[in-house]
Length: 353
Image (cartoon, rainbow, N blue to C red; front, side, top):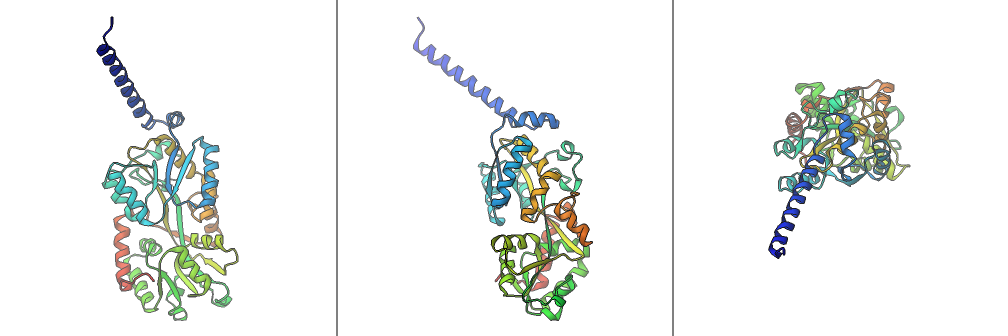
């Protein structure tokens, strides 16, 4: 006769081994394959991919279908906005709570994510050698699947045809004194800083301050203010601001000027979170988003890459003759923050209106 205690002990052992086996299986599933073929095979066993990105509804719906069709990966998208949302994800990860596999990390927070150990390196260039090298940060932490392009917005009803801005000198022209909007987050101008250098940049921003700009915040909000006539032009505005305003109101009297020196910034830097449940799926999705097929969708938010041949942005630059100005990955993080600080000082520490 077998005792009840022995049965309970045996059952406990079976349960213990089952849990251990499950842990090993999960551990294996959470490891990245050494080759792209291994990545594809492991992705088939992983859970639905969790993304924290800035995709609006139209782009989200289009990419959800395209990703499933081209990679077989099912995704769940959580839309995040502003620095606060990414700071919250970082703080939660530091506290041991991680709900996401891939996160779009804002430029100002990339060093913090790295130092906190919240994200891990991925050998993207090894997996996707045919994709443009600029897409992936040299340290292996980030993939630039979206790029922001910055120029000048103007109200087509209020600005005469012979006064349409053509470049950055218009922003400091007395013609627009007190009637030019400027965002207090100077991402366009930190990109120009990398191309212009410190001396030329500070000289420009001192003149800009003297032109009595109207300080504003947010690309879409500032674009809306131009459209309703609060000020006639706005400098350092993202192309995505035009698209967002036009999405809400196709009749908005708003147009975008692409200067010859066109500031470029990484608008979507995806990073793989430490402890991600679906790292192989995440890798496949990054590869697709960075490919010409994936980039074809990004113009829905005005953020296709100017470095991917045939993309909307690539064609726009080719047609206009504009020169992309970007300091590369090394100009982000601390370097961008330092440039931003000096620009804001030159502006006299303006406050967002």
